[in-house]
Length: 332
Ligand code: AMP
Ligand code: TRP
Image (cartoon, rainbow, N blue to C red):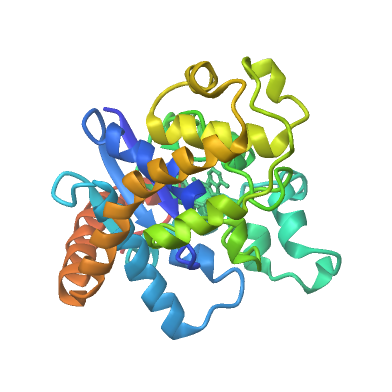
């Protein structure tokens, strides 16, 4: 059976990159796979969080999933900490993961910054917990944005190492699914850095909850160059801001960059930007509205998460029992 697992951290400022790189793709995949979509609160704790914000952000991610079109009856939606198997399996996997593998992780280096000795053990072990998330459900496919590719390769290596060490084929090797025209959405202020939740500039990103006026303003202010759009994709080389806006347009319109340039090649940004902003408003507006509608009903969101965690736990408990057998842990 093919199963999908993916997740988003409840760290606020859900943005267009999260939508186009991840959540939007999940909506299409739910028809063909058994899907588990998680709000990875334990991962969020690898950097300091305020408790009220963590709770509010957890509900916000759940609302984003549902508003984007993920069906909570068909898919399992839950928060990671509600299923203790994630932490338990992370320990078992941590015991077989060489430090050398973790030392290669670029996201740790970025997040730890220059004072690496002050970074927490959790931040270092982050990719091991991520491998546990996926492997706990024996997921075969993991739809994510491009920035998670290295973590997924590690998850495959860890699965392989476990299978070899215990002479089993228990874990499938999970496949990354990096889909669509916008697998790496860049900042609207600088086409060379990723759009991110933690960028201090609000103008660097379009948030999933932005209203029409805010989206229009952010697109209008987006950095560009003075040239008209090229007629061919090759002409986007060395024009990171233009390349980013064209990719965003293509992803939102569910078409290719070639098709976007066939329409807008030779036109100035003064023509392209209003079209992009109308498209973004048309696609994101209804989702943002549905999110705020859902967030007014905490009982509804919490009920969905509760039911999701029961379903997730059912699978997780079963797999953990088998894992205890494989590893040799006594279950008295
Ligand atoms: P995070 O916000 O780090 O929890 O990421 C959640 C999901 O969104 C992951 O699948 C990421 O790969 C994806 N993602 C985050 N930022 C971007 C971006 N700028 N472009 C495309 N995908 C992204
Ligand atoms: N590390 C991912 C991110 O920040 C979030 C995540 C945690 C995840 N566990 C996962 C994604 C398991 C896919 C599968 O984007």
